[in-house]
Amino acid sequence: MKDLFSDDSLRYKQARPAYSAEIVQEILKHVPERTFAWDCGAGSGQFTQLLAPYFEHVVATDISAAQLQQAPYFENVSYQLQAAEQTTIPEHSVDLVTVAQAIHWFDFEAFYKEVKRVLKAQGVLAVIGYGLIQVQDAAINALVQQLYAETLKDDWDRERRYIDELYQTIPFPFYEQAVPELRLEYQWTPQQLISYLNTWSALKHYHDHNTDDPLQPISEALQAGPEYLDVTFPVLLRVGMREK
Image (cartoon, rainbow, N blue to C red; front, side, top):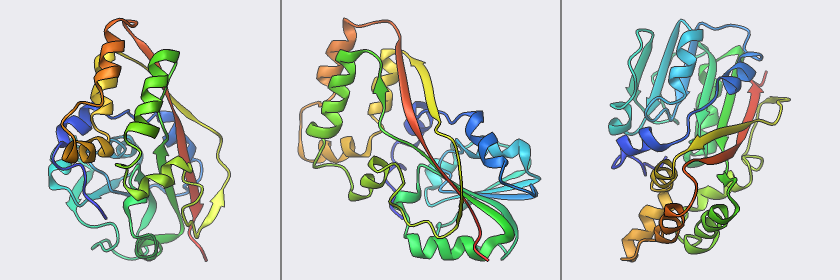
């Protein structure tokens, strides 16, 4: 699993979109027992905090100590520095495994082997993510799409394609459950948009070999734009039961 976010862990925590309660409720429909959950690739605990009220105990793991240090405290949550593909979690002990915006970095085969080892017989895996941002303001949106698809086209890690393909092309060896289409919707200030774009891993790679600021056209357009921006993200969600 790659670690691209330790260096800017606080910025990542503050600028990334929050997951909705609607996502959690949709997942919980498929989880018969709620004793123990494992949030894998938990980062700064964005999804962990939504699981905490529903389970007796939650283990949240990540390979980035810097990210985990930014996570919120809950009495029933244990944050642990562990790789997705090999953990100390007891076998057949977990009711729900979640992975939010991280599975595309994993070794699929090794991770799924670990998931099947730790899940109970009726346990569930939920893979969550969000796709490319859309801004309602047409001019700003055009600049964001240009940044994504043209300016940074050679700087995205190859794993990013799984998000572009809405997680539909990842291997998923589980009994998949039907889920509705969901979206994340926000009203952001221009600064929130810039802060979010600054968390893109491709932007970090771009700065490794360029001195200009690829966000400048967007920043300039925002100065003359609206005070608030309506933005949306398509939710990527796959839910599966453990194979028998």
